[in-house]
Length: 160
Image 1 (cartoon, rainbow, N blue to C red):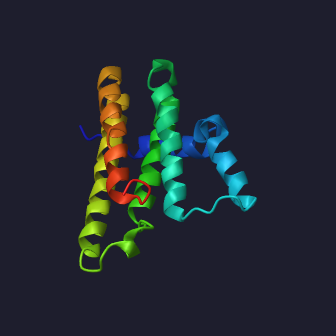
Image 2: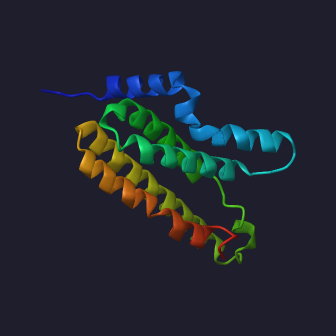
């Protein structure tokens, strides 16, 4: 018997577009950042915007994964998270030009590999949610969350 996940992917992407803004912008954080940028108080690169969106999705996932009744919300958040990770993977960190030229290609490969790892961890969470395994989803989620601080230490200026 041949199984296809195309209808599931289509359904998840449809849900993403139709999801209430509270799911996609938890606690209004994304909206608040947008208002600050429009007011000229905060300038972010496209990568920083993606990273903030990733943080918002992870924060909302922390809550939704605890409630089995919110499986659809979790899948919607995971679809958005994965899309933001893929988009961020193609960006260049702001500090890249400050890395010595001889070390820059290695730095960029390491950054991209880190984003690939993050995507793999997000997919592991999704796989567990789809399987209905709340314990595995929570464990995979904790591993995903554990990537943030070490990555920021390696790829952002604030922590260098």
